[in-house]
Length: 200
Image 1 (cartoon, rainbow, N blue to C red):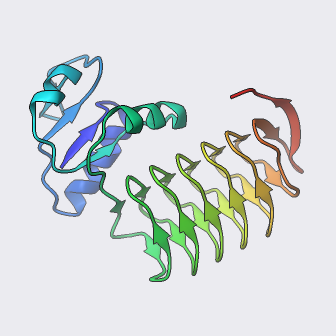
Image 2: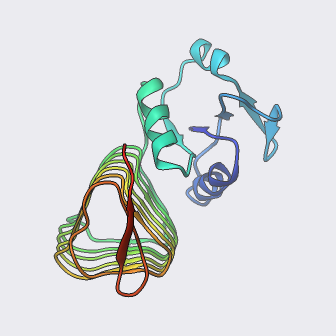
């Protein structure tokens, strides 16, 4: 498998693939700093066009950049679930999504394309996580929550049951979300308060 993104998040994905016994054939990067990363070949965008890529995963942490990459490079994207994650058999996980070690994804949750469910995060029953979302380490999403496209939920944040979070929202580290959040909002604090609305 190939990884797009020869940086920090790509390094984490490489370690996950190694834990799963999956061979990493190379990294891609639009602007590679070096030709080798983790002692693995790094290719640039021009070289990408010449190779026949059967399967790839995007190693980019930023949600907007990950979306741009997914739209630019059309290929078969893998879903990667670490063996130390707990994912209920009823969960639906779409292509390009990564489930990191120590996470729990509970019954009847749905996770969209190219999401990052980071180390130790909890997604409870009946949640709907849309495309390009990043749930940061140790964040906890209670039952029946909806998280819109491109939203980033920060480290250690908590969301109470049934809340609807809009698209391209930023939830700050440690925030507690107790009510619905509109598109583009930035939420911080306990309880969470909107401090600005971003256009997207």
